[in-house]
Length: 103
Image (cartoon, rainbow, N blue to C red):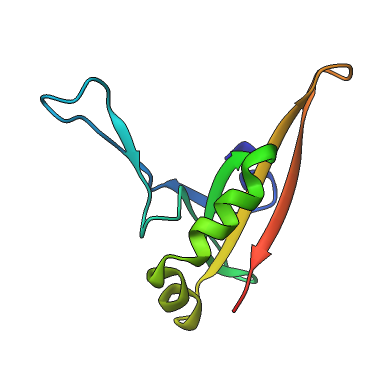
């Protein structure tokens, strides 16, 4: 979120943590099944961001493309970005790979 804000985006977390009474642990539910963050900037528009590990990036893209709401979101003018993060042990910093998914 900090990185997106540094580029002038307004950012809101839209992923929910759901606690079920009899479930052994809570689970996360994304907006439309594919969005963790809602972002907006006047010169860029509005979009949803899916944040994941870099190693899981391809699997998240495949999963997101299978969700019918993604097509509706994109056809409605929304944008969708995948961010894959990986910690670089030698350099001790996080590296991000970003992909925008289009129709």
